[in-house]
Image 1 (cartoon, rainbow, N blue to C red):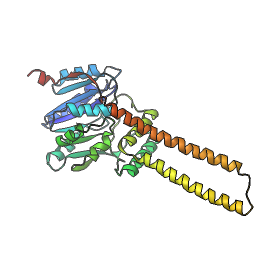
Image 2 (image 1 turned 60 degrees about the vertical axis):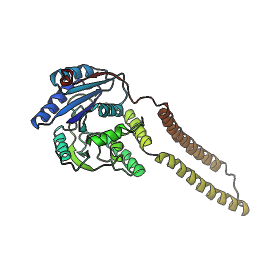
Image 3 (image 1 turned 90 degrees about the horizontal axis):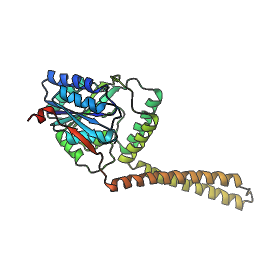
Image 4 (image 1 turned 90 degrees about the vertical axis):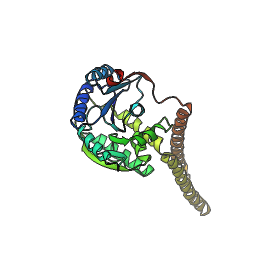
Length: 311
């Protein structure tokens, strides 16, 4: 069986369309499936639409969060509730083309692949600012972790053993897009063109994108901490050069009033120190969040599949 997980936040106009389109695709290809909608504390009628979809399609399951916990939590909640031999993650707005699921499924059925990554052939309609931001983010992640995620997405198929490995990982602050590659296993890529949203608008603002990028990098790599050390070494080198220069001028009788130089050096040093403290403080806050060991999410209600309720 194939479990298809759809994280949903304010997607009331997309639930029924996604149910019909993906469901008919599965039936046409004789694939046993379940659709798992995870309502991530939506403020609209997303949950009501999920309940309606469960009446239309007996293979629909709904998981309702008590509040908004974020897409990462919705993804892992879907993986936790999935019963399939393989799981597919796909966006509810259908920017990930459902037809690609068939290609993923057929490749997985060969028994030679455990993870099938959906990679973007084109990014669709995006602003220049968004494209530039993505380029910088993925470039930074590749340099710090060694994982190339330039064309990566959350759209992927995972074999049951991969799902179990991810579910067994105890950390709360997660970056699914990278973790699914970190666990290893046999991996292949399929390529797709990003489609226009079926309905609604993107939930990503500039602020949320920056926050997501910072959380993702600090959750998956310690490179920013190493950068603090590098900055310290650079400052030490600058200090040694200036010390030699000062001593030379003093001994040669060319010593000048270095007030401006001292002020500029002090400002530069203070800036490096404050940024370094900020980076270290951010990692400490991550440690604080982890050691509290609060759950990734809280489920207020689960709507079982109609075919299960009738048993």
